[in-house]
Length: 96
Image (tube, rainbow, N blue to C red; front, top):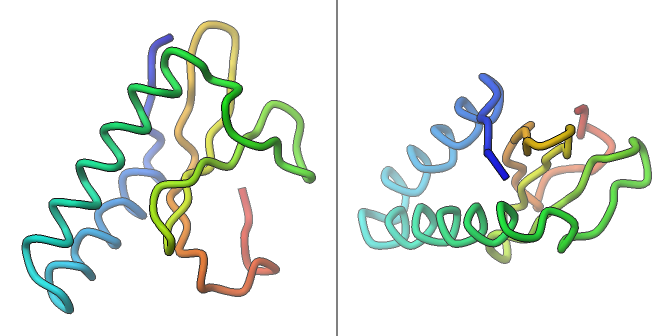
């Protein structure tokens, strides 16, 4: 399946990478980017592999790292990346 990045997913991805570069350096940032790439390959082959959202239909929450998740939607023959989420945040603030 084709993977499409929303503007919000690009922005939240960039924020996480920027934070990792600033606070922890190049190696953790590269590791995060590699994990995202692996997950994107996996969900393009099996879009329903991660747990369903309790809020919205066709939305799934994928595990990237201990601290980060990916929220995505399955639409017809595409996967739309909605946003990347820092799991340490209050889940009540999560809007997608």
